[in-house]
Image (tube, rainbow, N blue to C red; front, side, top):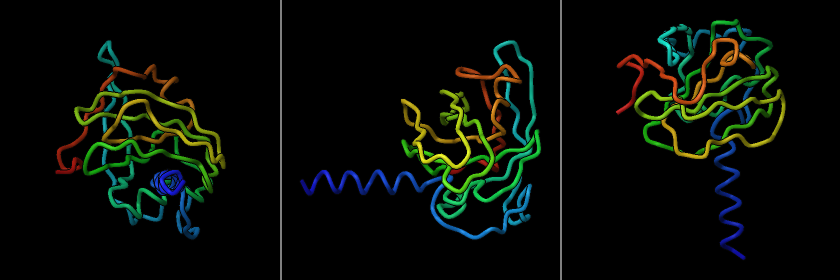
Amino acid sequence: MRLAFAAAGALLLALAVACGGGGDNKGGDDGDGTLVTATITLIDGAGKRAELSVELARTAAERSRGLMFREGLAEERGMFFVFAQETKAGFWMKNTKIPLSIAFIDGEGTILETQEMEALSEQLHAPARPYRYALEVNQGWFERHGLGSGDRVEIPADVKRE
């Protein structure tokens, strides 16, 4: 029984990795300027490219806060979650007012899968396989740009972690 409680506790901790866990409302529509930004390029199977300006969530605190409390997100903006190693951590939308799409990306920059996430939902979103990066954008962005599993993300070297 204790093992079951320990497993449940670990799952709750994983839930708070991104788009969950407390915080105040400092974010504004496109952030408060405290997160580092970068430009990433997504490339579909035919070579068509789409650029995004992203805020980088590289620390546990940044990943936990995610896009919570924001009122909106510009169309060509997003948040790029960087993990030091592969993870299976899940995302939820508690306190996140914007419906989002998420791409789970491996260490080589390949999109493993995308999922749609509803605003303010506590449903857990996790991919079938471990990932190294996650990209959140306005809901439907990947579909509008014809991007999905198997497509590529060019991640600048200064964005990657050890």
